[in-house]
Image 1 (cartoon, rainbow, N blue to C red):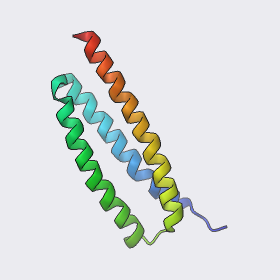
Image 2: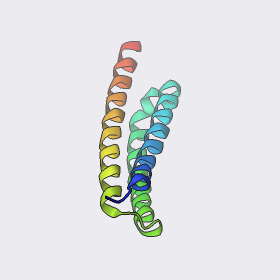
Image 3: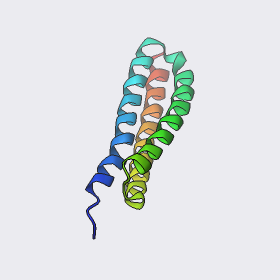
Length: 100
């Protein structure tokens, strides 16, 4: 069995960095202007589509990683962190609703 540590690490790194950055942006935006969260969510969605597309292309072509191991790792982290983000947005909406 070949070592896939690099593929797993690269597959994890992109989604983790984007998720942490997104949550930090949400936190800051919710403190400044809670009514602007919807606009931020739409812009972040489009930006993440572009960033992840470029990330996958670069990781699979330039770094010449094992594609299957990379995609399995990337997909698992992407889905798990998207669920975390969704739960965070939900809780943020609840806290904004109760503090108004």
